[in-house]
Image (cartoon, rainbow, N blue to C red):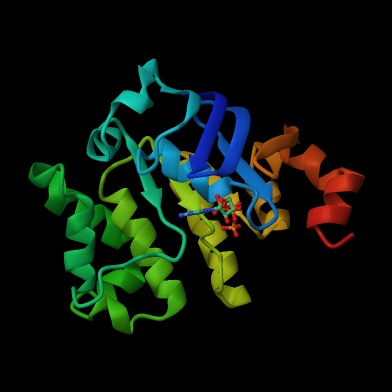
Length: 232
Ligand SMILES: Nc1ncnc2c1ncn2[C@@H]1O[C@H](COP(=O)(O)OP(=O)(O)OP(=O)(O)O)[C@@H](O)[C@H]1O
């Protein structure tokens, strides 16, 4: 589904991503793990078209994403849930969700009903300003907003960041549920243990490069991964 080859991304003189290769197959959950600053968010933003590669290719179902605008990338079936949620404060929950279907107004109401079925807590709070939601609820709103675009590939940037343990488990349950609906998932997580538990495959990134890859299970059992990312 997604094939990233020789990807390099710079911020001026900073080489954040230094020649990364990875694939995501249709129907998989793939995770990118790694320390702060490894280049994970930069990779997701480049897939979404928010940043442009300085070298390499990103191919999605035979389409070269480097030639597409972010809105065309959403229309092609890729939606991103950004790090830090970025809900629209001052807009209600429903208004936030409707923004997620900006490109497909005809199916917006139908999709809103589907998202409310999946996130009953959002339905309960549908008239509430998004700014007044708890962190976990805002994360659900950001995920629901992405689902409004009916993505085939969902990019999740640190969905469990800053959440209480009860919400972290809930977010991982939602990821499994979204995946069970046939959505392919590319997941970035600091919470490497839980990410590797749900993932079919993972890539370990450090300093803008892939250092290791394997199935979620194999990486979870790997001594180097355990020592560096799973607390021994
Ligand atoms: N807008 C920017 N301008 C300059 N440098 C940046 C910018 N954004 C990120 N960087 C740098 O690029 C490198 C990769 O950052 P990135 O956010 O992709 O890492 P990450 O693996 O997602 O980290 P984290 O887990 O902390 O979010 C870091 O060295 C970071 O300081």
